[in-house]
Image (tube, rainbow, N blue to C red; front, side, top):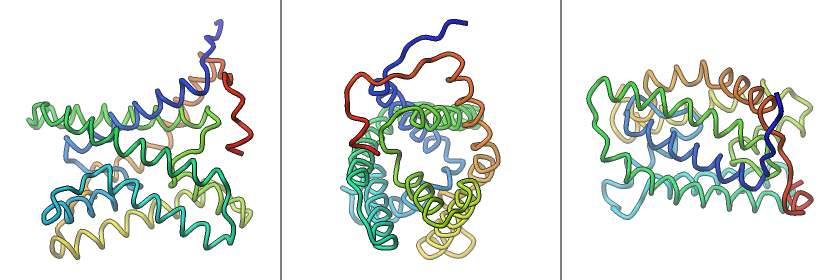
Length: 226
């Protein structure tokens, strides 16, 4: 099958759209967010109760900014690509808030919530897989995993597992602190399901992209993201 050419810059835009629509649908489903953004979601739920101007998107890029700063301190270095990661996080945050306004209009029956959750999880996986085919810096979560694995010579899969579990634990602790013991917000059954199948879906979708698309650069910007 002849591959279709797709430019990295356009793929980056598509990836952001897929990620934000997917996250907004999962939020509308209220069955649990993915582990990497669950801490930001719990913080959003708490802070927005007394600071109405706080949005989910705002907390997403705030948490990612803290991760980038923490990474730079831990590794004692700062790369220009880290700044681009923050730019991606801000764009993602604003797009997410817009998508949440749209998905708020969707019905929230039990059946619909299941549909929104499944669709949202698939779209998020498709977005991550698409982002990995561009030269643009990924979100802070993926950057931390990549940099820590490279620094310590560990496998990306192992570091990713540790990061995901740590992020899940942080979200659970925050939920207990803010909403009471054994009151889960952000981390629910859907979070567990996402953790089990997300990596598998990203791998399958990434392999499918390789058979369908020929990713090329339109602008000469790759060197600034390395």
